[in-house]
Image (tube, rainbow, N blue to C red; front, side, top):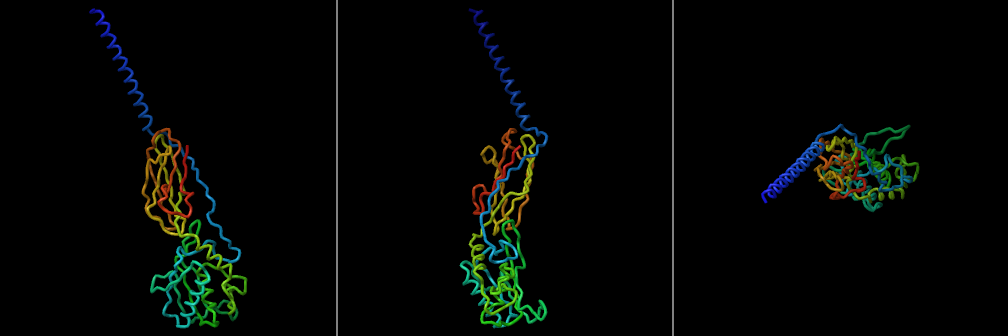
Length: 320
């Protein structure tokens, strides 16, 4: 009986030793894997896969020449200020031009303010020579423009009136207002954008169609990722990028999400981005879920918290 107990004891000790060896082996393997995961390796440049999206608006410019395509204010209610240098008759002609422009279009509205207007109007009696015995009756155009990849946003327009109205119709005032909205001179002698004024000139159907098309596009932001570079060092990721706003208006509360294996692993708060501007974003030693992670998606505004012109250009994929 004693022998039996001794054999059993030896057997138990052997089992415990075996368990100890197995546990030690697991600990060693765990430590090797742990060290393998955390130790950076030689940098590997990641490939960038950008999603290409089609143009989200189509506008015909054939019937109304403009300085630049997609030139517009970023709002439809446009303010104006008429300087005290304008006589009563010039002031009334300018207001009538605003009224007529507004009545011809379906989504442009004007209102007068005392300062900080979208369009400033000044008057002068100076003569501006434009050719042999020809003098400008006025000047006008956008004086401050923000250029994005989609639009040229007018931030300020200015009009100078040099002569009193010579027609019952505010030809000169409408001509200069057309320049503020980006219209160039026309070869159509019956258009108000013809270089030389005639009392029978009118706002053309092409101008009206173009203004209505441009201003029917809802004024929204459009954020996207640009200039992205990324390097993977084992389990760690370094990336540099620019988050751009190519839309019509400023955007607030932008975020950047890092998605690995279809799981959001980190959300960065980017904040506000003005229209036509960008934020440079740089991250070093970002810890991936695994050293074997080979794909990461970077999203701006992943949860669609911000309404945008184009919500199909918000993600860029990086792969080894």
